[in-house]
Length: 388
Image 1 (cartoon, rainbow, N blue to C red):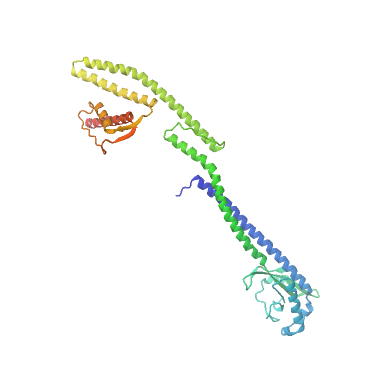
Image 2: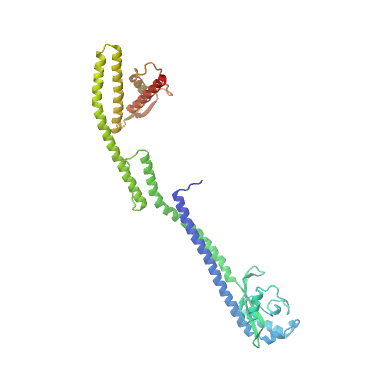
């Protein structure tokens, strides 16, 4: 499973919030703008249809019948309708009956009596027109691929609705929404980039102190208690840093107390051990019985081991600073081998050097102690194996 860092999560969360707000706002703005423009166009077309319907002589309209296309009455009425269309910048005007048949039409080639099969309104809306109401159609796409809308108004004769007038107008204003949509898309991209940058800067202020605390915790885990933990904020992260600093100081104080206690105990043990070692040496030198002399030497040996352990405690309580130099490993190993000559008696120890007279940069005494401990551990392990 992919694990994201805190910074990545913060940037992702911040960016998603901004993007969701912009997308939701853009969708709402697009819908609201479209709805407003469409309602405004609908009201305008219905008003135009009502105005023109009042200017048309309904009696002359009722007198027209199929085949009257060449009559003066038809031509005059069509000319008036065309004049209204031009004056109102409409795309088309036409008059039709309740049966949805044509009476007048500014569109060329539409004879009287042709059925308008594809009127952009429902039968209920047609009934509403002939009940004396003005209605408008939904948006539709014309043969030229552009959006249009139609407003309808009733034509009265002697108080009755005898025909209906349709004014078809271009929804060109709605096409401006496409440009607005492109602008919103560009704005959204700019907001996205800006939110990523702001998210990065915002997360930087949070993750930087967290990373400092992480590095401090790693140092404490590795035993480095000397580096203090600096906190510059007073928020939760600052409180956490302050708590870690108090913990570090407590560990340092506890370590100092333990070392002081170990040093005191080691000194108290070391003094009587020196006396025991001295008297055991004197006893061994004066004894003539080999068995008793061997037992005294064993006491010396164990006292020596105890002194080595006590020395280790003292080294822990007061660690000496390393004095680094180039140390020849063969020479240091030879010194250790000579110190353990008696203990190595009866064991075959071989030293294999990968490189002739190889040297390393470190404290000579520490290297000597390391090799000494390793060889003693090896001797003790071999001795236990032989005993078993």
